[in-house]
Image 1 (cartoon, rainbow, N blue to C red):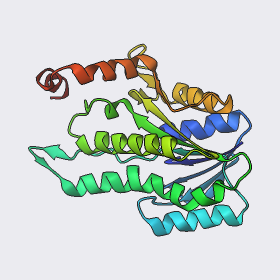
Image 2: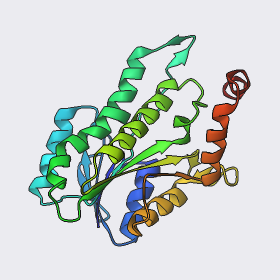
Image 3: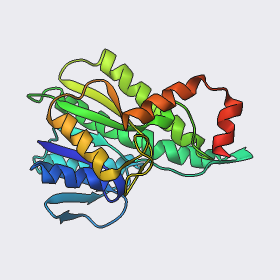
Image 4: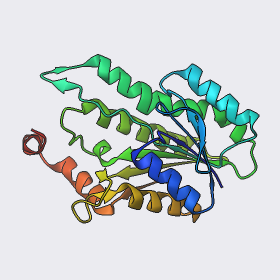
Length: 233
């Protein structure tokens, strides 16, 4: 399969690329850091996805090379503090320009082309359990951008149909190594789960990883704000 991944230079994006390559898939990824290059079997293009002109240029490069992905993993996000007594609207805008509009640009560019492609394609939204309950200290726009992406994908899944599939995975806290059992996971384990589900054709609608984290954050929606507030201070 041919995979395309945004935010590929580090963290989960890097782990996803490595997992795809380990399973014998092709990978083309973009990130703001690092020069464009072939990197251990992966093509890495420098691209700031918050700028449509750079997205169009990278997409044109892929199309010219005959690389039409089977799977688009929209992983890039801006995780910045935006609230301390006052809401920093500039940071809110930057967060959405990357994690929301920057990821959706790929759908607007490739959507029509892929709707005619044999077998269609999968668009996978890398979201967060913070979309269920905004338990994120001083990063309210991060949770908001994830929730917005989730709803766009939900709407596309309901109304889109056809050969394009729209899938959301809500991830709990991740790090290089596993943390609290069942609640937090490692980048490598999350990548193995995500790529494995896609490869097996089992990815439908949305799912959470680790599963317990998804359950916990969904339950937290019924916990009063005054109690949640103690967790994020």
